[in-house]
Image 1: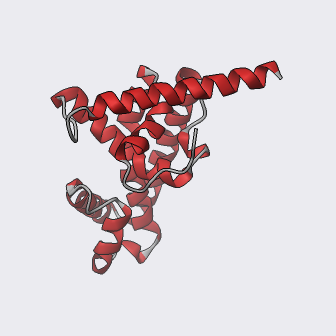
Image 2: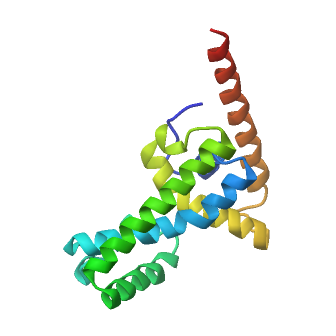
Length: 177
């Protein structure tokens, strides 16, 4: 399995992330916890630094993958509104508690159900960037049968199966030696 993926190769990005999320319970855990984790990260950043100053919205938007999907603007404004209402101290506490809950849940999903280390251990940046998009696409595919283009899901699923097969073969070889 190669850790080098072309920047614009959407199929390979989704296949990389999907290969680490093939168990249905782990997928549900991630569906429920990835976006709250992003939300908690923004709460945490808001409470610890002036980085979320409204004059720096462009920077924050780029951190939350702005430009690819515009859902993040409403998401970001919700964070600002909530954080301003509850104050910095409580925002910090909620951010930290949410981070702990979301990360523990996701790691348990990998350890208990997936039986595979999370993607972030193999490619930290790629995992953080693709996680929210992967979850969003999974929901859009499940609820609305959405595909970015015809045949996308079938091609990605084929690549996921191939990557999982390769991972299992490597795992088996390690057991033998």
